[in-house]
Image (cartoon, rainbow, N blue to C red):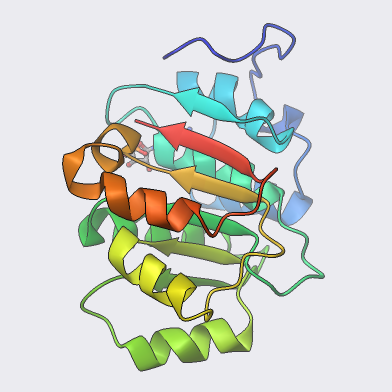
Length: 193
Ligand code: AMP
C-alpha cells in the first residue's frame, strides 16, 4: 500500500475502534466481518477524517469494504442529496460494490443507486429525483447524469475512484476528467487501485 497516510493515524485493530454510526457497525458485523484487513486497519480512518487519499493494495485484500465503510460513515443521514460518488471501470465491479454497499447498509438505511450503462436511463432519473445519498457507477452513465444535471454535486462530500490506475489510463482518462469538472473544489478525493 502506498504510504501517503500520515503517521498521525494509528492503525485500528478492531472495527469497534472506528468512530462510525452504530447501525453501520452492526451492518459490518452482520455481514460476517470480524476483524479489519490490513488496508482496512490503515485506510478507513483517514477516509473518515475527510483526507484525500491514494491507496494501493492487491485484489482480494478488502479494498471495497475499506472505502465503503469510510465513505458511508461520512454521509449526513438528514440530507437526502448525493454525498458520495464512487466510480469504477466496469459494470461487474459496479454491481459488486453496490451489493457490498447494500449489505453494510442493512441497518443504516442510507439511500443509494447504481448508475451504469445497460440499465434504464428513465429509472436512473427516477432514482436521482427521489433523493439518493450514495451513487455507485461507471464513468459513461455517471457523466451523462451529471451533464443533464440529474446528478447534483452541491452536497457532495466524497468522490472515490476504484481501480484508479485503470480509470486514469487512456480509455477512461477523458471521461474521468469530464466528471471531475462537476466535482466542487474541496470535495474529498480517494483513489484506490
Ligand atoms: P475485495 O478486495 O474488496 O474484493 O474483497 C475480497 C474479499 O474479502 C471479499 O469477499 C470481501 O467480502 C472479503 N472481505 C473484505 N474485508 C473483510 C474482512 N474484514 N473480514 C472478512 N472478509 C473480508
